[in-house]
Length: 497
Image 1: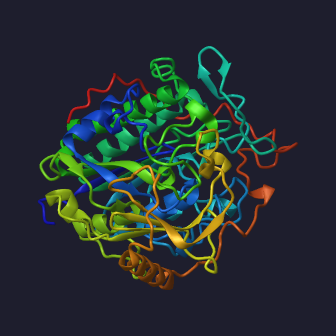
Image 2: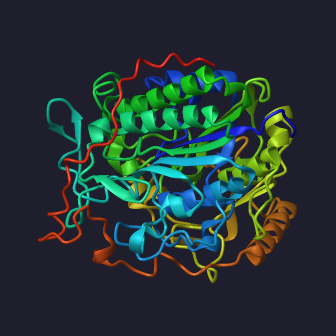
């Protein structure tokens, strides 16, 4: 696509946000004014997928356009002392855009590895700048994390016996433990300043903003805490929504909103284990860490005034498709590797049918020998294996916590008429459909190469980030509260769209 100036790209990525958590997707009490404005003025997806129901692998797939099995971000997720991380030979969206002169920044939750001397941090994956936490905010003691002033501790537990959660700028720790109640405000200031600086420098830019919200345990600063009727989850969502509004204001006031593709989605479904503080998948089945619809189908919104017409699309799409689409729109060269994404620009601009006809799902513990757990083909979803998770417990559906079971023939559901996956179809009555499903399964499995597992490389406590590496005793001595992130005063967002 040609334009007077290269387009800018902004990706907002929520954490553990379910299909039913936004008011634009039917939630009655979520307060999301900025996201509502994006949904009203943009294209809302009903059939948008992540690759897997877990943090690290889902993020790897978004940034590389490749299944996490290819990059080795399996099984499970990365930890503070993980030896491995997203391999440096993987091309991210940021890496792809750098030869075109793009300014690039990541702000928020990275969760794709730290490694020795910061080997796997964003600044080694194509990003000029990074402000954030290198892993999940619950992967460390969170006694300092409060939900409501003055000092009400958050619901639940975080990881003990590891270093306090650090805040990093580029590859340096600037605060440990991080001040959670100021965190999102610092992120918003960083993001808006990055946009303004890029515009002043007349540089196209890519901003990747993966928030910690709404991952458990939820937190929110003074501008959001206690301000919704939905409790801590709603407050955390409101805080992210407020930051989104401030970024959108920065785009508008910098004069580049008409030349910026903004995309919003989430990394996986809700952690039902946390009950009302875990989010909701709405009418979809189960949630986080499963391959059921509630674990992998996500809200998604594309916004670009004058280019993306407001509306709703039922086209099949995925986070895998973002990299190829950005390449098409920017003129960037695709990485010379096997990609699993497709260009969906025609869907964005003309609401044309998607080039994507299928979507394959591996579990959080994938195996080439076992093969695919599930496959979406057109309107149908087939399960060759089903597997629940404690992350999706507490609900009334026993399937959400059931042990792994194989199905031959597969369980097949018509998602157009049965999005809740309640009524499996009889394959005896549809041998043609079964043949198509099995042929697609064989083709997709044959196309998949498993990279060396980065998570199986194990952990080394010496790799846990410490602002005072020579201190003792560790990990409790890793504290540098005097180093503060930049703070700024922001007016309430106007959401200028």
